[in-house]
Length: 235
Image (tube, rainbow, N blue to C red):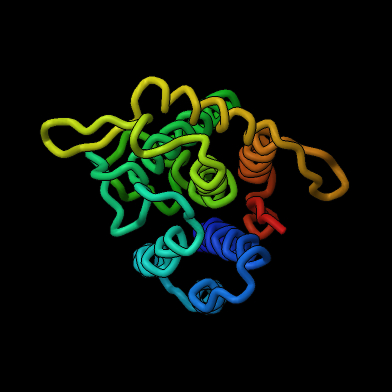
């Protein structure tokens, strides 16, 4: 349970950090201020939860708090958040979220394999009916600072638009077209190679994920003192 809380605390912290990042640009936005306040309350609530199921219910509520933030920041027509749709996505924003999440999951899973960890030993997502789940635990707390930042930057800088870079299929599903995927992949790679300082050392985002995975493995192999596991938090 301690490990589950560590993952979730980093997840919620990074959601709030993202909100605060945009609050610096939109200081008078009351909706962002309210979202930041609610996320702070959710972080405090993590410590009171008694089971993984309770944490997952809290996570679902936190997503409902956080996701509308997109509408406060997006500045291009054709992109808005109504609700999360996947398998299949039903609008350009959901198509972007699904595509970027898939890239991140793939990268994290590859790093887990490289570290010779068993990806079936999931923590928060262990009960899901998936062959692997550990990559979801590591990816979730990195999504706000990688996936969301990439998406919001691409849209607000008008590097991608809803008319030219997506295709709608007969069943109403919406996906990035070939050119759109190329633009997103290029931006995603640039983000992964962005350098930042943590603990006096310089890391790329890709290296930060690798650092956390190795830290996790080292603790499991040594004394198993999970209190020492500190998933990345953005400041």
